[in-house]
Amino acid sequence: MQINRPSELLRLRIALIIGAVLVLGFMIADLMLLPSNMYQLYIFDRLLLQLPIILFVVAVSFWRRFIQYRAFIFAGLVIALSYSNYWLIWVCWDEHSFIFPYEGTILYAFFCVFALGIPFKLAIAANVINILGFLGLMWIAPVYGDRVLISVAFVSGSLFICAYARYRLDRSVRMLKETNERLLKLSKYDPLSDLLNRRAFREQSEKLLALSKRHNVSMAVLMLDLDDFKKYNDSFGHQQGDEAIKVQARIMKEVFKRETDILGRYGGEEFIVVLSDINKEQVEKHAKALLDKWREAKLKHAEGAKYPLMSCSIGVAYAKSVDDISIDWIIDEADKALYKAKEKGKAQFVLKEAQC
Image 1 (spheres, helix red, strand yellow):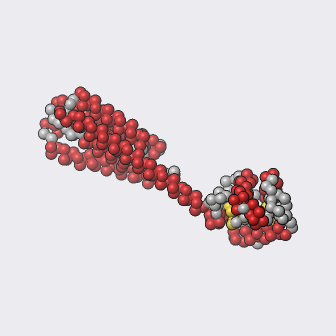
Image 2 (cartoon, one colour):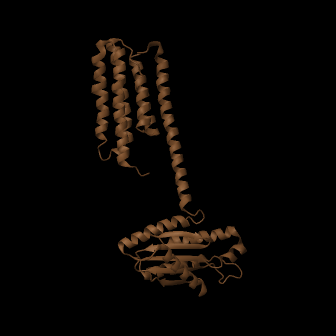
Image 3 (cartoon, helix red, strand yellow):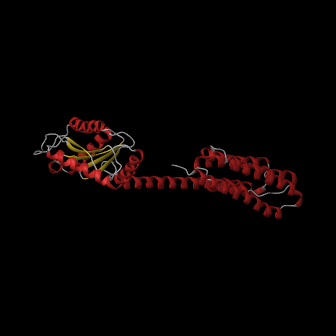
């Protein structure tokens, strides 16, 4: 998915600054609970460890490859903040016999995972490292006495819930994205042929015409129609008729391979191709290739059809200059050429050099 880098970077920087403000906000509340002889230690941890860590990440966000590695950077951030908190808990206990709360570890995890967007796998890895760190802290300094086990269980459970919630969120977002992509494809593509539907084809053709006018290049439109398709459908059934539609789409994709080539299903057994920056000889070569590939397909036709094998007729409109033409006009010219091809006996193409 394409990332809007400026807006995403701004959002992440704002989230980091909010995190720094929250650290300062909690300082006010914590200082009201701490004895005065611990102020220096606490301020050192918050202002000279945690706050610089956050500001360092803000500075790193100006690195040109920050977006690419942001998830790893944020995972490192939550680990660094948690371990600085573990250090504070240990020193408060070891030097002052003071029980400093562990809730900050949980807050850091939830903030970094959800506000900064650490994905599930990295969230699991970071939270496992933080749980192991907390277990190690409780091993060397059983700060919470008879509440050590419940504290370990609470921290471990909270970090697990944090990571699992991230998994559920990532999964929901992924499913929503896949659904949106399917809906977008359904809105643009014909489900049977997997070619552009008429509305999407029209939009793309208008854009290609505008581009052709800007660069003063040629344009061609090919209208294709399966010969005696109604007889084929009546004889073999609609399911086989659908297969013939698919064969036509496959042949078109084999012949027209440029990114700028626009292929669409115009309706029923009619198909259309719009080409830009191409000469008349190349267009004729493509039309012949379409007919040759239908002969190679050897798809048996119905009784009463003009030819024993399925074929298509092609009308081509070619405009060397597109300055004064519209997409409707050149499509109409291709349609007239298609009518001529049908009149002349089908299974052939007629090229009409469009003169506006």
